[in-house]
Amino acid sequence: MARRPLQSCALILTGLFAISSTRLPAAESEPTSDDAAVKALKDARLRSMRELAEAISVEAVKENAAIKLGLVEDARFRFNSPTIACDDATVWVWGRTGRPAAVLTLSGTWPTAGRDGIWSYEFTSLSPSKLRATNSGDWEWTPQESGVEFQDVPNAPPPSDSATRRLGQMKDIARRFGGFALYNGKVDKPSRFRVLPTPLHRYDDPDAGVLDGAMFVVAVDTNPEALLLIELVKAAPNPIWKFGVNRVSMGEIHATLDEKEVWKSPPGGQMTSESRYFIVMRRMSP
Image 1 (cartoon, rainbow, N blue to C red):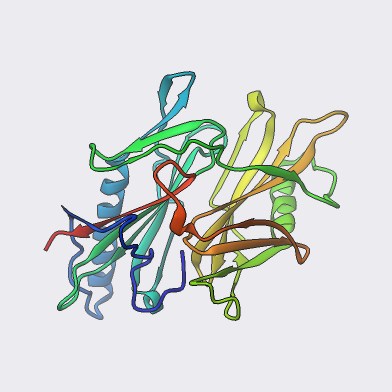
Image 2 (image 1 turned 135 degrees about the horizontal axis):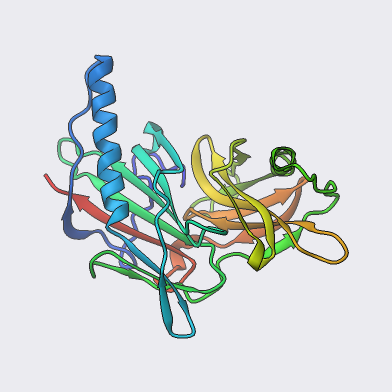
């Protein structure tokens, strides 16, 4: 999610992902100072975002067979950033067991005088297999490449036998990461990252060799720019820690570990519906 003043949470692209005229539910007007009114409006907006997420079908495609993936019930993260006209946003995950297969950042820019409201959908694949996602035929996302590549964590601690202590170890590893994003080719104005301390999601998948795992947000302020996955995986003679990074932003992403660059991704403007990152925008209804 980029820092783009006076724009929606996602970059509006000309030609590639033009905003459709399809109408989706609008948010209500801004709340008053009354605490109850503020809470009611926030709850209503969350329900709207949940309904939009639940309307999306995501399938894993393996050997020409499609396996429907379940949506994790609750939004994993919620944020806003008025400086980039991102009024409310949530992060949703598909894949109730094992490593998440797909992640959606769903954000809203509420309508104002002379400006339509916009719902922005930003998808990223974390799946080793192909995926297919659609919203009642309105659009289709079919990433053809593996969602994330993993690397060994250098100088990693021996894994603890305690799940609680392993979580602490994963948080310690996550704190070693940083990096920056570049927008519009402005190499002199990098947006610096921080890894948010609380993981979005924790999981395991012993059948796939994943003994423990956690997914963290790599952010500018609170705006997600990338996802960091840290996993403990089976290996001989002992399990080892691995990490993987994937974008959730249009920017040029540079991830660092111990201040050394370990992953980068070019600007997202050349992404297509077959790429591991995909963005769709729709106008809200009046």
